[in-house]
Length: 178
Image 1 (cartoon, helix red, strand yellow):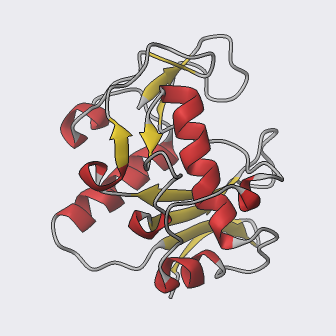
Image 2 (image 1 turned 60 degrees about the vertical axis):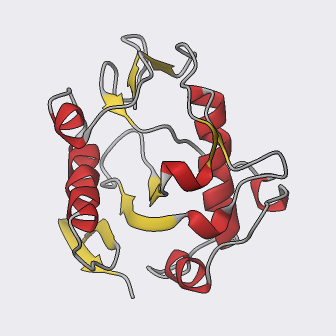
């Protein structure tokens, strides 16, 4: 995780996971292995999806490298087969800054080519590995706190389908994909 700078318009000073917008070229990047059929299917759930499923995981790998210096995968590209979808979340329509985000989890030992976080980037300051307990003590956005609870449940052995959080008819809703 890393802390966003004070000068950021979106979530200043908050501790977040690396991530960002899917670039048009993300779906065409090489990968050492493709998504599992289950993860690919889950990424297509929840209404209109305008990008190929692999673009979301490749964007996650690219953003992780850009923001933390961590290379997910090997020299031949990310191993998308190790990525599992944790959740999808869409910000409320009244927010000035919006996102439709997918959150992934992967076993670091299985996907990290180099696990030494870089120094701070323009996006994230104080980049470092945190235990779940340490992460929960940080100044977190509500969605990040929710994702940490989902991760904790999965690591504790619960078999959960990814939640899809969004606003419908003026109220936040959550449904499980799959």
